Amino acid sequence: MRMSALFGRTLRETPADIDHPSLRLMLRAGLARLTSGGITLLPLGVRVLRRLETIVCEELTRIGAQEIYHPLFRPFTASDRASESLAPALSALECTDRSGRSLTFTPSDPTIIASVAANEIASYRQLPALLHHLHPTYRSECRASWLREGLAWTVYTLNSGTNERNETSARVHSAFERIFRRCDIRLTLVEAGSDAGNGGAARAYVAISGHGDTDLLICESCGYAAVLDAARTTFNSALGASIGGDEPAQPEEIATPNCATIADLARFCGVPESATAKAVFFDSPERGLIFAVIRGDREINTKKLCTVAGVSTLMPARPEQISAIGAVAGYASPVGLQNRASGRALIVADLSVTAGSPLIAGANRHGYHLRNVVYGRDWRADLIADIALARAGDPCPECSALLRQATGLVTGYAERYSVAATGATFLDREGITRPIAMASFSLSLERLILTIIEQRCDQAGIIWTPETAPFDVHLIRLGKQDATRQAADALYNELIAAGITVLYDDRDDTAGVKFNDADLIGLPLRLVLGDRFLTDGLVEIKQRATGVITRTPRREIIAEVQKVRALPDP
Ligand SMILES: [Zn+2]
Image 1 (spheres, rainbow, N blue to C red):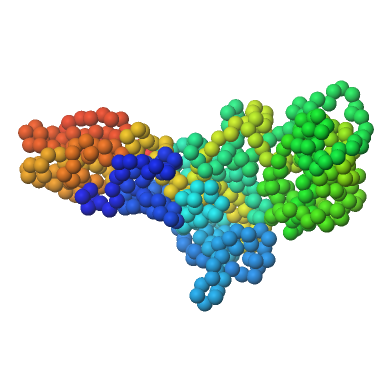
Image 2 (cartoon, rainbow, N blue to C red):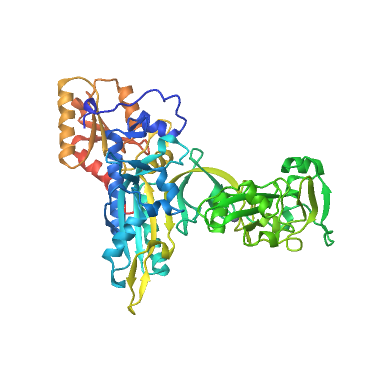
């Protein structure tokens, strides 16, 4: 490719309003432009995409995955609408075609995979099966608007049971690890929560950096890491206010006028917020009223609560639901409500109120609270679980060291589906019908590119590996003599004939401009052929990664370039 004809140019100035370093480099190097919908890849960027496609397809083929493709839109059916777990996500991407048909955008849809599997797979002999496909994605919840749309690979595994699913999951994981090694990037597998809708668990492949779009909590002591709203923590009594050695006193009602908030209550009583219990009410489609109790200084993690309670979504409770069980908003607690709430509300207690010290809780009477409320003695919950939003400084759930906040770019996901959720079945060895166990894995292409750039760059620009670079060689012609021009053109043609891809800077710019562009675009090898070549017959070779420059006789150039392109097996 001649640079004089390349669509998309390098930018000398960094776009002022972009604060993401790898996106800045992508824009400056002419790989992409930001347009209203997000990242538009230019030809150089698409070449990187194709290189990554090759790597991903090779590694997925190596583990036996076969490629499929399914439509991006499907009818939005009445059963989708009725499904509490699917409806919110599907309706967010609902559209209507000109004939008035209601459609939903499902670019990678496990229900389609399951329906295909239901038809194709009859016997255990056909399992496991691994399928993969490349498809567009859209994430409405993505914090960075320019990253909402993209391309991704999804791998589905179809298995005869959970053991086989674990085995194929390990195979896909090893393929992903090889992909990351071939791209020379380091990603961390972190907990990303579980999805009550499909009953599965999720983990995310994250590039931990200061410029990600996802908040994480990480433990530097044992390596535990999780997306913030999936992070677990642990509570022990040492974290609460001191209990002292004696049996806590009995609950005692105290007048607390105008103390409907935790902050007011703590101030009025002269205690920290952590010495109070907070009652939070939700309505849910599956369980109705949910009465969650958590220590006053903590917040409820609604995702965790959904999972624990087995509900798809949470909405604020209506006042009449709260009063129906005898609770008084602002002064509510589960103390004395067990029987009245039974069957009409699900009481869920966070570990922070069950493992700690006596707390000040509501008295279910306007203007009053109870002192010395102890879990187990004074009240009980239907469920005890970790439903707190974890935060930096909380103890690690694995080793109790303190968690630290970090940010990262989520580049892929690993998800398991509950066995029953797929609806597809097979006949086992004994001829018994059993459900197919599914799992899925995904990798985002744009995020992979951003991660490579972030982890492989310097002040001057990007440093591509030979395998991910948009071209193998950046050939620069310096000097304007006709003989030099002819010699450079001849070298360009010879490299191409040898199967080497070349970005040929044939422009009449200064050496400084050309060298800066070569460093910015970051191809692994830079060849320079100038007027001096006419006298000494040498071509300069610079390795972008090491900066090492050698001057090599013209006849050895092809062999030298091929030596660098020859890659060790990852
Ligand atoms: Zn730890």
